[in-house]
Amino acid sequence: MSKITKPKSLTLISSGMFIIALSQILSHYIELPDFLQGLLMGIGIALLLLAVSLGKFKPAR
Image (cartoon, rainbow, N blue to C red; front, top):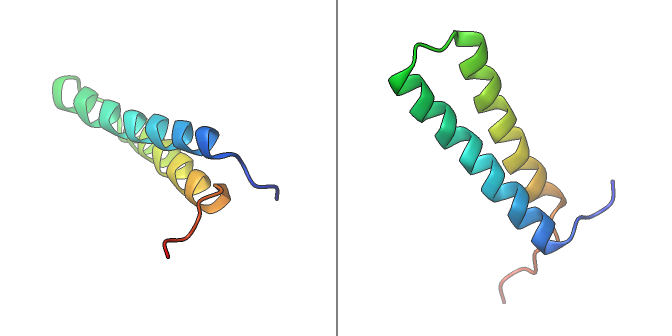
């Protein structure tokens, strides 16, 4: 797979964290089915893993 640029990976990280937070907030106020709650958590985690695994980050020296 090809690498993605740093701004795109930061966008994926922030959108993944937003989806996870949104699912937690919605499940607190609204009765969400387990399928929908798990789907939102899975999409958020997948976006985070995609950004970390394909992102172009320079290692610390």
